[in-house]
Length: 228
Image (cartoon, rainbow, N blue to C red; front, side, top):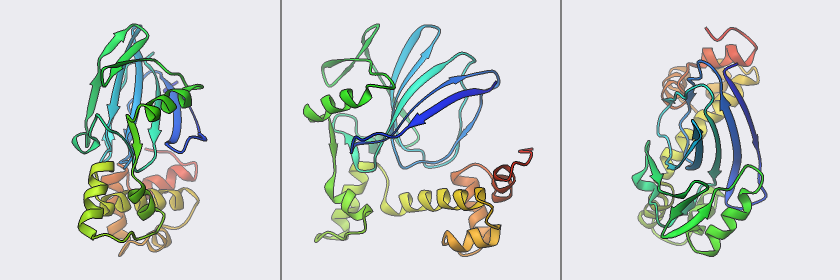
């Protein structure tokens, strides 16, 4: 056993996904790039570590000791903590101080550890206390609407709310789209075309950087083949 993992969606407008896992032996995945940031509660040897994990700009190997468990929240693009600037956390994490064995500190307040089933209540408190906010301009642009303001202002709003430019987010999303196409059995050439790459070589470079694997490797796994 390498990993026990499950995830669920949420009806919260601030949350993209809620997930939890338990590492088995030889757990060492490659985490793909992601424009989202996460709040992670990791338990190892009876001690809980709470951290804010920023967006990943490239595929990153991760290791966890056998028996380590975790519970995490992935937040929607445009949602951010007002007291922990996400622009400072690209490929990084910020560890939050514990207030007690079952609580942590954020902006001078103490918060009980949420869990996989009740995290929405925790997020609602963050919103009420103006610690978790959502940038409406970023959300509008992501939905395809161009606001009546300069591109420079829009760029600044994206960097503040997401830590990334709109172009960087688009590149990550295109790589994820290509992975989905390949896993569905679409040929490498057609996947490159449908995902908007200039050619197959362009897709290969992108997936190796953002996903950590070549298109051929992804296609082979998607078709039930041997990953080696």
